[in-house]
Length: 489
Image (cartoon, rainbow, N blue to C red; front, top):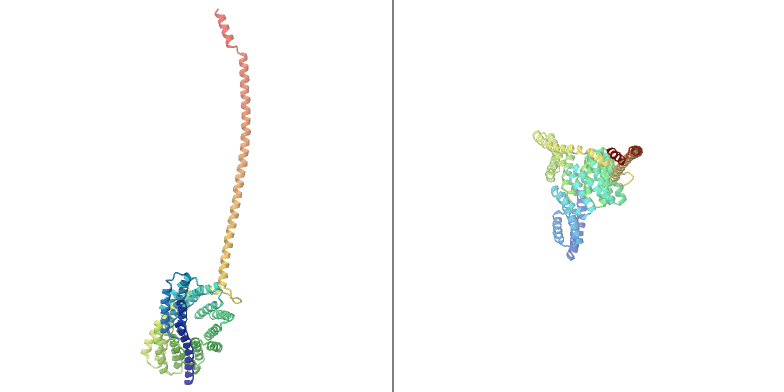
């Protein structure tokens, strides 16, 4: 075992040395650069290279220098220059967020990711927005806040679908598979992990394929399919070694070790955990270190090596408290309680058990929260049936719903128009009928008026005729006057 540890250290030293040489070369080039834009871009790259080999303090020095240069550059009135510095600032803020995350400072991680997200949104950089939403999703997932993790993964997926970025979508689907696994829905988890693998293969992303094999191995282990799990872990381990993915290699080794524990093959489990621990220490992965200490404690507890078990639990506890990992803290206190009980130290066992209950209840409340959003998760994920295609079914369903609403609205318009037209016809019919009736009434009135006028004319004519007859029969005034005068004489 000692030889394997020495060999592991030598490999890690060679890997880190190669990356250091690369960084030193970039630093030499940096000294000869004149333009600030070129300097900022290279310094941003150096920052990324440094945090990838866990040189966080030096990475932060470069990151802060980049931020200062970006602030100065943003005073430039040129739009193109301003956009360049904004983009560089967003990128280095993401790096700073990752550095804080690797050190377990999730509060500062979210602050920096949030600032980066705002800049990408201002620039309209959808890829930057998608990546940052994915980063934020990881933070919440690590904290056990799965509803928030889910929300951010879905935001990321939505942007990658718009961009038709199959590699980005593959990452998002794999992340969604993780959420399903954490919910215990293994069939759905495997479906999305396999969908992710198809996309990775299509884009030629071999490390992505390795991640999928590792995820499948983890699901197989949860299903109790230990041989299948080890087979998939082995494929993942080979791919990660070939690609120099040390962190990934470490987590695959812990997965294999956990599987060997379940198979009661404790020596093989211990070997894998020791190899993983050396890697995590080399890259300063605190959560990986804490988790592997717990794994080693569990192995030694199973073989009744209580002193070693106690040592590893107590090495894991301060690190788990530092990174605020409730999963690890709960497991440590449960392990210590069982260990104390096995040694006959019942009082201390009770104290550790009480602490275990405190953290377990805290996690239980979070579990209840997860259950509250389970139906929402199922609804969101089940809309994405893409077994034969990478096309986003959620988008199609949204478009279909929109289309159905438009059709329904059109039907309402048509129905309303039909009713309106029918009413118009009824009104027109009533109006026409009223007009016809009025016309008939007018005709009748005109006819009656004509008859009256005709009768009136006949009456007047008769009166006039009678008057003439009367006048013809009566003596004239002159005739009467003559007769009166004659009588007087």
